[in-house]
Length: 130
Image (cartoon, rainbow, N blue to C red):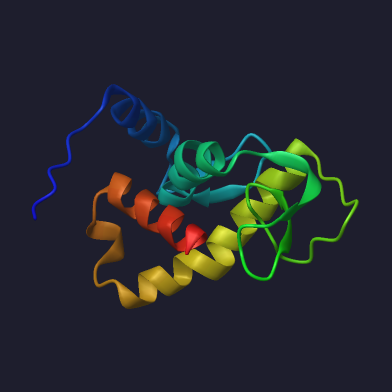
């Protein structure tokens, strides 16, 4: 089975906006946190919109066992009743992507930075969801 991917106007606009803001492969998020261009793409156009941002902790019953979750699907150190700000959520996801996810992908994917920006962003989002 062959799957053919085609570009969409939304994907082109997303990648163009990240490239336009990128300086030396880094982008500053609205919260001021500086991340790699592929991380910014994943956060703004893939992970955030897909997960849906929630500023108050909720019990996610999809995983087994249930997990307290906040922001864009973050489950690290989340407790019942916890509340986060927009800037706090931006920082939570940016720190985790840059610290926990991106380095592992870079280590196991040869020539990570030579792959297309859209592909790298998609791999980061996939790793967040897995």
